[in-house]
Image (tube, rainbow, N blue to C red; front, side, top):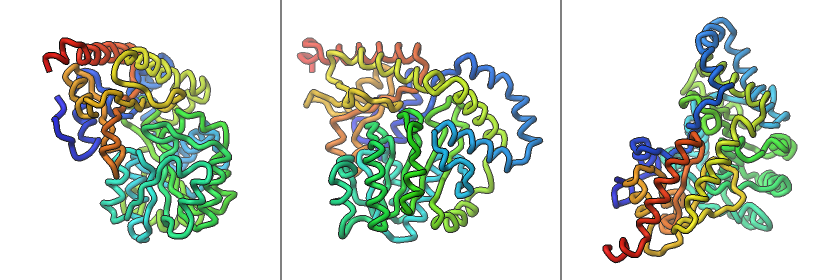
Length: 386
């Protein structure tokens, strides 16, 4: 069972989730391979042999071309201002080291996964909370006026809420950052769950003249047992200092991992993101919402597409830790909302998060277990016993 007191960070809850019969805690891609993806796995020996023979630079170019092509980001395809890392967290740590050395206050989106403020603070960055409402309407003008932060760090689409500005809203925000000299950092690691390929974010960034750093990743999308690759893309003015930091940490990504992930990207390009990535998430969201009907848990965003579900607790008698403990006792691991609201954990205590990128059959069993536990906990007999 989850401890009755809050743990220091969400990653520790993810470790507890791994120990549960049904792990719906971490947001990594754990859906099972479909038949076409199983074929990729059966070809691992040939993938390994090919990755031994081919020049690394060719594999890197092929990976980035496939990634940005699938993402609909033609302005980024073929660019040289990119650095490859073994994980998004590694890319974010490089960004944090860069921001900490510059001594600028960083406006950080809230709610967000708490490893972001943790990494930034560890590298010496000073943080200011930024609400999602600050990024739309007149918000950017208020936020990025006199006395505004020197850098703005966003997760788009946001984990856990799925918030994503429209194309005009994004363009307005980027222009405001360029006008005020605000360095813009964007974590795009959930992009393939939100139809971001319909318009080119890098074209907007490059045309604005803004200084920016963008973190991309494959680990939230394809079920490769945490073999993944992150891209750290920079505006022209920031590449050299980030390149120096990157060289201190990493020489290159494994050519085998690069080629393997490229095979998954090619498969998604051929069969479509709906068939290879989004369908199980959509099915699991529907199953979860059905299971939660009539319980104390209510999904926050009716039109969410991101591969996690952000859920509000309607009963004032239960906190996020109560719900996490209750479901852990039933064998279902989820995350409490406390630490997502990294500057105000009391607000986050009214929410929990379910990860959706799982095998639909196992997820349905987890939903049945969770629903039964929630119904039993709210029954009159249980309340009387309590």
